[in-house]
Image 1: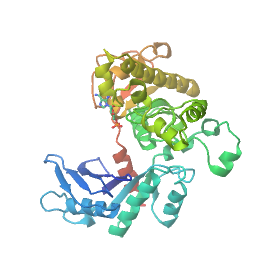
Image 2: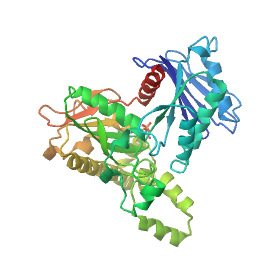
Image 3: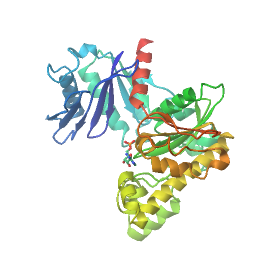
Length: 395
Ligand code: AMP
């Protein structure tokens, strides 16, 4: 089935048009500066990229621009919009309402709206993408795929916060977790690569601009590092990960920051950028680390915290069969992967440094005799979204 995948942000919209069986990508691209002026970048494998300035006052014009270029006689890949069998939308927060992907109808939209307080930055933008598609292609079925859904199998002891229980009961305060579509894809591939055993324990490390780990037993998440929102866990590019809440009170008192300013610091100015003062990009940190103590410290901190989570999840699961690395850092940085696995021999993790010299390719990089397999698996969230969309539409 040919599926259009939409990932709508507040001022940008990414799209990919692909085959749900086999995952062939026909075209993909990006609308930027929505609500400001508007720019489209359209990529078709084997052709030169097309860049166009197109007015995009709202997401409606952005979706229209995507459809126009898809059927363009020169730059397009289809002759009619009818060739798009369905649209799959990435939605950040599904709250407690969504444990799986769902066909978009009025009830689904209402439920996504109810999750806005939990995902105030992303859910409204995701909804704008959905509403634009409903308006412009009203007869094409649409599906919502949630970043949180895969984590909904966590047991209460993993998702409950140790604050008054009424906040869970009345206000849905709990751990949700994110990057669920990515963790779902790579953990399923890891189980395949393990030979589909009846029982499996996988630690999935999604290490990119935003990063999270998930502990997956028999294909089901039992714990994950992000929380109610995606700021939680270990340090990321610009996000702090978990911090002692006392720090907030202390700094807000000292500098008169509002909670909004404080959260902006924790979201945008912290993580490895905050420690290093150099960059949020791990390539820049690698380059700077030799002569810059703070860049080296930022990398040390990141590696140390990921290692601690791996240890914690091995303990939580009572062992581990495979550790998987994915996303920008996980797929590309052999040094970080190596340093994360270094010293984990005591739990049966032995990496083969030579096999580890790969980038962006599926690989088993464990040394001969390693009790725990170490896999690199490029993530493919779009394929997961396309497969869910096709499956729900066939039903
Ligand atoms: P993502 O969010 O998955 O697109 O990951 C993007 C991040 O991956 C970038 O900000 C970089 O920090 C990191 N990255 C990409 N390529 C490399 C590389 N070769 N070495 C280290 N980090 C990389």
